[in-house]
Image 1: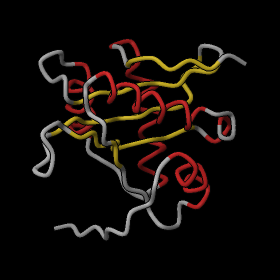
Image 2: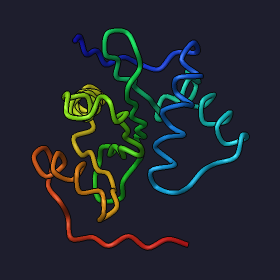
Image 3: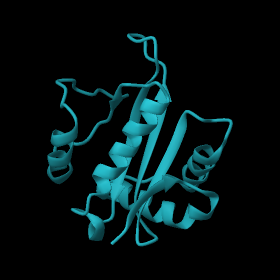
Length: 146
């Protein structure tokens, strides 16, 4: 099995939708067709370099994705990186794809001069949290939303 991580391309739309839809279903949510189309266009737009996506491929087949966003932060001079969505298909879990996607975001953040990378997950996501606990530090922050 060969695992590669690469940037999203215009040819990836069907696979990207399949993976992102599964991610959203895991969290018991969904988005409209307008959001799918707009997000995909934004992820590919060279005029929007702050918003990025990578795919994990095993033997040439996309099995995972990550979305990340660089943004300013009032407590730092440099930007920070928000890892917004991370998903690996069930058949590829435990193969290192999730870790490779996170490490690819870390590398992109380092190249961007953005040392801080953060993300959120739900408390019940125990399998993913086992990985997260090994490669990042959990914070005591509680998220509020409007």
